[in-house]
Image (tube, rainbow, N blue to C red):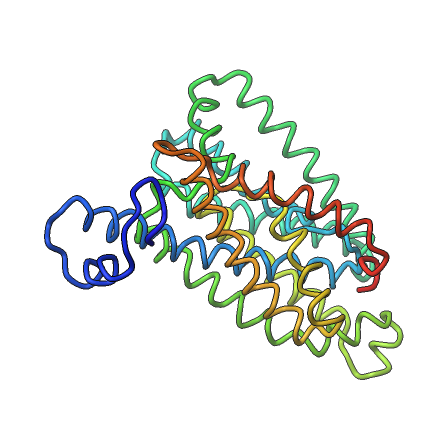
Length: 307
């Protein structure tokens, strides 16, 4: 709210947030920085929770929200929205991205559960196959349609710029529902971490927990991607940082991952505005620059493998 290309003191920002005096500074605070800060916090919370859920459900420390095909499903729907329906505004992408994310998740779960119970390995393989297929479709559309490519490249980087209150109001219910569902899964995820058979012996309905977790990931990651586009490394790296602080107990890992990811995303957005002044670096670029070395450092620690 106060740091960026135009620095504003805390008192002035707080006053202008509640009382619009019609100045340029008031416009910056109320119309630009406040909405993107709120959206950044919500999207960060969503990505952090989605990453922690994915790693717990698949028992794979390298899992991230894109593993179930959620992000590529959203991307495919946005490409279709631009190419077929001529939609160009970020607020117009939201519902297409949500529908695409939901459709991709349903397809992955159906493929992973075909003929038998869904297991983490089968769902990961189904997600990888669907991601490859949808990537090919997106690539073909972008190659033959230069106008769509020109618009899509700004969305796919992941940016908070130009996202207003309207975008927040559209995605907030989905993120809120996903957060509630995710935070209720801490105890059964602890049981699943001991293995499916042990979890069942402890009274956990394994398939029900796995399906509920997949729904939560779809709500969280689908809404986050719909709001600002794909953002890498947040959902992958932040859960590991949370586990370093809290240990393996998912009742604590989930809320810590949510808070840390929200701080990381808003901090990355501020850093992008400062480093790129008078323009800005998109938050997706900054999280990639920050997340890659952090994740490499975490990957070199032996504790990473213990979920």
